[in-house]
Image (tube, rainbow, N blue to C red; front, side, top):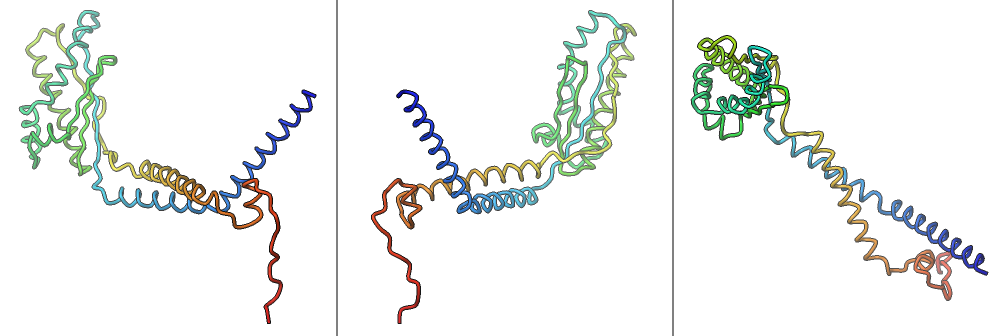
Amino acid sequence: MLRQDLGAGEAWAGKEQGMELLETIRIIRRRGWIVVLVGVLAAGAAYLFSKTQVPIYEASVNLTVRPARADWGLSNTVGSLLRSLAGDITTHSFMRQVIDREQLDTTTDDLLNGKTVFVKDEAADFTISIVVRDASEQVAVQLVNAIADLFVEQREDWNANQDKRDQIDVAIRDHARYASVYSPKTTINLLAGAVLGVVLGAAIVVVMEWLEAGIVRSAKDLDRLDIPAMGAIPAESGRRR
């Protein structure tokens, strides 16, 4: 008897799953176009928004900082001084020298407080990263290379007054040759807009199905609501004379 009850329960569960699958297919066939349409519109809006933004370009240069000799103590000293060395770059006096040398039409406040120049030290591999972001690709490349060149020159002048064993060498790994687009990220915005649109479209479909859950238009709706039909009115076969 228990096996029969279990078999009946499994059959009922299978029937329920089949009905849910059919219901899902029905909703997709009826409302799927809404999800697709909203997704396409949202992706298009994100694309147009990205194209209206002023592009910001980013150029970067990495500096290698090495002690003059392979000494464990000196290496630790250099590692601890990296943040101080990087901080020397982000000063108004240093940026003023860069502006005057390159004859740039900007101010030190624009470079430092306007989030144009970014400097980061990496003690793990003894490097200093310099990043410049600007609306002009040419200016971004010119400025980041000028900052790196001036910093290296100043370190060489400092080394000239130090004992050779205590010098700290700074070298440019590679000068910046081009700048990449930092913003807007058109592809990312496009995908984000599409995903958001699909989610919004699905939410609209759910709300529409919920509002129409109790509306009966055909015998199939009665079966979906598990309501027995007492009768049916046949469709008119011909035009009444």
